[in-house]
Length: 398
Image (cartoon, rainbow, N blue to C red):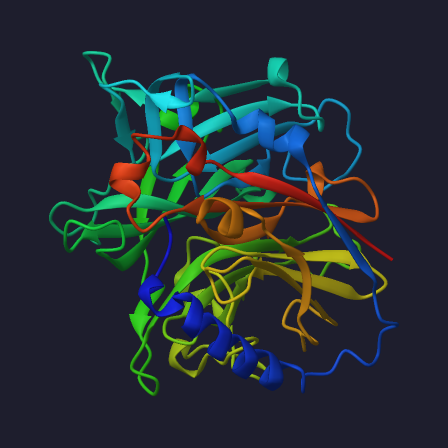
C-alpha cells in the first residue's frame, strides 16, 4: 500500500488542489508535438485475471517486469514477472474472505504471453518452514529499523549485470492502528541473480541513500516509483544508455529523477540527479518535473520523441492522468485526464497508483493498472475481497 499522506486527499482537498495543480501545470510546454488524442475504456479481461478465490486473492503495488529485459510488444511467448506489495492469502467464498486469511507484505505472479489468460499465469507467495504464508523480501541490512517490512517499487532485468533482476524496496513500519498509519524511511536495492520462481527466494539487499530529507524543502525524497531503461538492449526507440529511476518529494508529490548506467546500478556514487537544467551529483539539488503525481507511476516512450507520464492524479483520486513530454525528464505538458475510475462513485473506493505496462500493451495503446482501497480497510477487506486488487484500462493514443 504505497500511499503517502493520504488524509490530505479527501474529496474537498482533491478539488482544491486539483484546480491549483492543473492550472500550474498547464503552463508547461508540449507545443513541439502535435496534440495527442486519448481514448480510454475498461479492460475487464485483464481485471478478471486478478480476481481469485484461493491462495493469492488480493494485493496492490503491481509492477510488471519483462524477464528478457526488453520492452517489446507483440512478443508471443514473453515471460513477465508481476511484483506486488501487501497481499492477502486465503480462500474466498461468495466474494467474502474466509476466516484464517493472512496478509504478507509482498508476492509475485509469473505469466507467459501477452494476453490475459488465467491458464498462463501463476500467483505465488513465499512460505516458511511450517508452510505458513510469508513475504519474499524482508529487511535485515544496514537500513533496517525495528519491525520494518518491504513494499516494492519498480524493477528491471539488467543486461549489463548478467541478467540479474533489480528491485527498489521501501522500508516501511506502522505508526498506528489505521491503514494509513505508517512511515516510509529508507530504500534498499534488491538483487536477484537468478530471477526464477525458486531463484527469487535468494537475494541480496543493498543499502542505499536514495531516501533522504531534502535540505531546501525539508520534505522526504525517495526513488523507485518507476523505472525507464533507455538502452538498446531494452529495445527502446531512442536509447541513450541510461536507466532512469523516478521518485517523489513528499508534500506536493513532485516527480524527480536520477539516472546511471545499468552497469553502475549498485554504485550509488555514479548516480546523477536532474536539477531542472542538467545532471548533477548533489541529490539535494534534484528538481521537480511535475507535481501532483502518484507514488507509483510510469514513463513510456512512444517513438517520435514522445514520452508518456502515466499516474493517478494527486496520488489518490478517481482520475488517471497522462502528460506528454519530449524526453525522459520532460518538459511534460498539460494533464490529460484520460479516465474516470468508477469505483469511487459506485463503491466508495479510493483509486491510487496508476501506471502503464508497455510490453503488455497493443501498439498505439497503453495497458494501465490502478489499485483501490478504503479508509476502513482492515474491516472492509474481511467483508469484500474485490475491494483490493488491481484494475485495468486500455488507453489508445493517436
